Amino acid sequence: DAKTTQPPSMDCAEGRAANLPCNHSTISGNEYVYWYRQIHSQGPQYIIHGLKNNETNEMASLIITEDRKSSTLILPHATLRDTAVYYCILFRRGGADGLTFGKGTHLIIQP
Amino acid sequence: EPEVTQTPSHQVTQMGQEVILRCVPISNHLYFYWYRQILGQKVEFLVSFYNNEISEKSEIFDDQFSVERPDGSNFTLKIRSTKLEDSAMYFCASSDPGRGAPSNQPQHFGDGTRLSIL
Image (cartoon, rainbow over all chains, first blue to last red):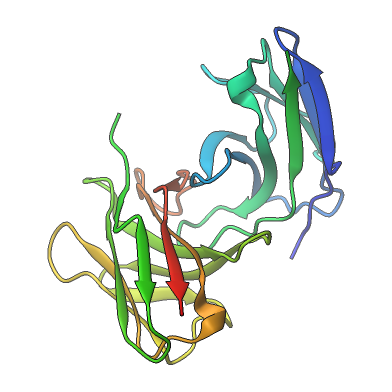
């Protein structure tokens, strides 16, 4: 399976943009890039996903490089509630597959 | 916003006993999943379920596990003879098949059931 690489931890000041990188150099053409986060003691929360175009929703923006080998999740104005573990996951278009979670990036928002 | 609900939030069971974890997926979703997370470790996929049968399962999902959709709203995970190493958070998820196939709709998770085996 294609895998992703993320830094284990990052800090960001409250109110600033948090930019979380993810490398996925072996991504296949039919794999989407998904981002989830897990706030302590809660279930994973879906954030955003994309195939090759940049995407934006009310939570975040996703920038995918043209060669699709890496991506960046952007939280435009981080708040303390954004402190969580963020997971970058490749998911083959299909529907029934399970998600493969790595260790993710522990993002800590500093006041 | 619709959400996946799981009950109970915490289940304590004696080793060797059977346990059933319950989930109510989002109402118009048709794909259902179970995951587990042992304390301090990664979230691990167990099984997916569609059209009243298992679609995919991981190596973890052995003969002691089973899943069922007993009615139009519930989705359950049964562990037949619990072991100490079954202690974990168990997450249920569901997804919308979307229009046409294949789909790329995201999976939405509940907040889990903490299973403690004594």
